[in-house]
Image (cartoon, rainbow, N blue to C red; front, side, top):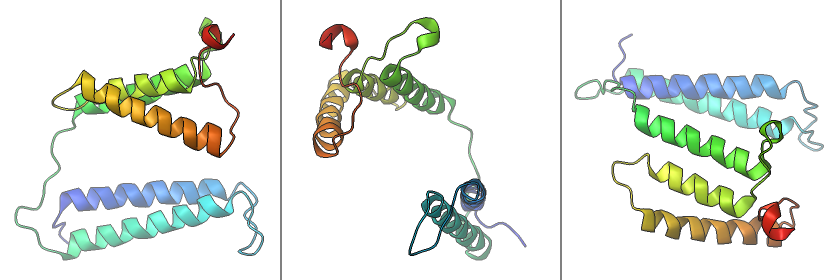
Length: 162
């Protein structure tokens, strides 16, 4: 069979592999039944659905004709670097890094750092728009997680809250 859309084929392959990996990893937990779900039930079902979706995308990439075959382009290294870095910095700032003596900076500072660094991934960057987006996300996250769900984690750095 000929691949008629390379982009769809490799996207479907990625979905299938990630879904199968999550489903396989979920089997190490107690899955339970539909009536009494265990901690592994949701990731197992989600992994299976993702794998099925991947297989459907692979099938369509082999069956539906495209004009130029939609070849896979070059890897966009700059966006990849900034998005991964933004997520790593968010995790470090949110929880701290005790091995090097960096205390947790809290949710608000972590969100601002995440948005500003991730904003550098695009072709154009506006610090003003990044700060507006970070403010909206910080307020929304505070209201959803701290006020609404009553989750207990650090919102501000220790040197501010004491």
